[in-house]
Image (cartoon, rainbow, N blue to C red; front, side, top):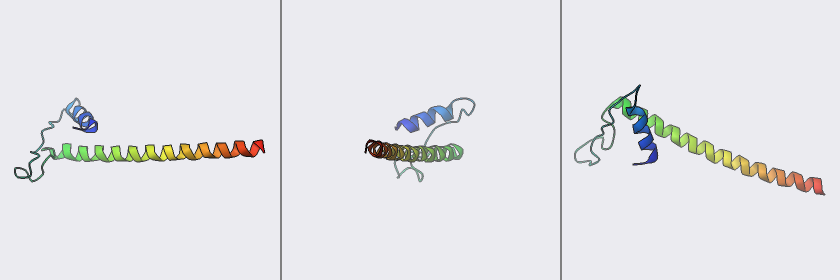
Length: 83
């Protein structure tokens, strides 16, 4: 289980939500929605949580890109001042 899934399960099953986190079987022979939460509201919350994680990762990548760009700009400016 991923850290994100564990964090979600802990959050959604704690007060004030206290939702059940049972899932359908992961075997496709036994469940049409294998691995999904049985409670649709929990499944939708999980999908939102996962999307949020993806957006956070994209944001972190963009911040890192901008920090690298800023470092390059600073080096360029220092070079101009030293000329």
